[in-house]
Image (tube, rainbow, N blue to C red):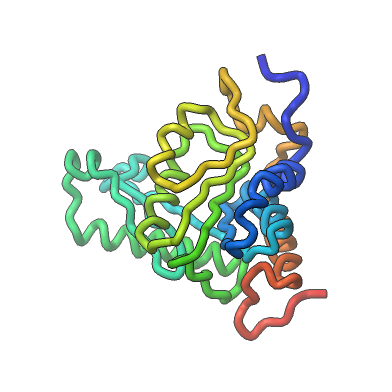
Length: 232
């Protein structure tokens, strides 16, 4: 059965609780990276509380030749986009280097399209040498988050932290080797679904993401689109 009383009212409340647990990181002036879309309201509260920069982190799966639902890896967005391959699947299917490059470029174009939707022509914030906090609204299996962490490792952040309101303990255990620290508020057992731990868990809209990023930008916490003026 699901809990009668959810852990959090909504994503923004979860973000405020998460920020309190991350207060020790504030002196490092961290970069907060939100996994869109659900991670954005959580990360917004974290960035505001820590007076930290906020950016988005897109992760796109690379589909196998002829079987797009089967992932051979992922590409992770950023100032220096990174390719993360699933070596076991690659060994089994042996896709050509040309196929991998082409699929990576296709997914990078989709990332660029989505980034422009939310941030116009603002460039990704450089993560190298920074304390970086990756934020989502929760973790189930952890596949996307694992790819994100592996990709970020390749750009050499000074410290890499995963921060989520809720996740199963076994998924977190699988991720411990991919980051320096994990901050998770609730580790329920048994675990059913992320949404079961929120009283309100509606799908985060594009409009909400854009509004929060514009608000963060006004406070200097998010990148401003190049040559653009902020809406009033």
